[in-house]
Amino acid sequence: MAKFFERMEPAHRKFIEKQHVFFNASAPATGRVNVSPRATALLRVLDEETVVYLDLTGSGNETAAHLRDNGRLTLMFCAFEGAPLILRLYGEGRILPRGSEEYASLLGPHFNNEEPPGTRQMVLLKVKSVQTSCGYNVPLYDYKDERETLIRWAEAKRPEALEAYRHKNNACSIDGLPTGMFEEETAAS
Image 1 (tube, rainbow, N blue to C red):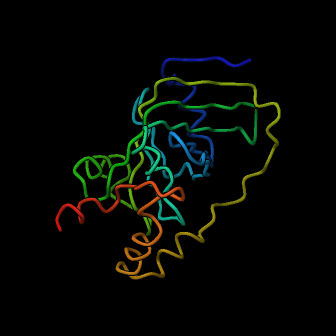
Image 2: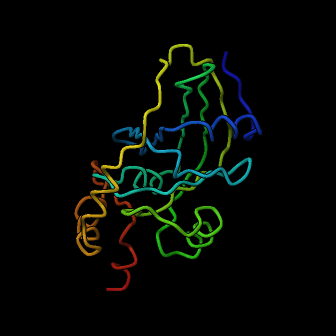
């Protein structure tokens, strides 16, 4: 049976911190729904109503475009080992651009001023509600290791090549919505 909470409780935080993967879901007012897996190693629970994660460069930047459109974001965590449980965080998300004051203010104390190669932005979620459900249909899996493929890909690129890739692949969503990644450049022109 699903249960709703107004904010994360200590047991929710403990559950989140034990997981290896989470899924973020976002959608524009019209267009495609996006669901993407993320490593919890890059996620931090700041308080009972705030979560942030480092977002690595990928083939698209759907979450950024969708958050610009309407701010809706859901993060889902599943127990793949131990007792069954699904936990969803519903709320309003926003992008914190690399180099911004707010990004720097979180990178230091919460990420030890360390960014994995290819980090493009942070995603911050202000939690409006938390839902737990049984998770009886979630299969059991044994965790083996993190994939290093995306990190190695970013390490192999020079900074200017990585920036060119982002310009080409991360400026708009697959539905053509702007992500806002390069607005400062446009405004400066």
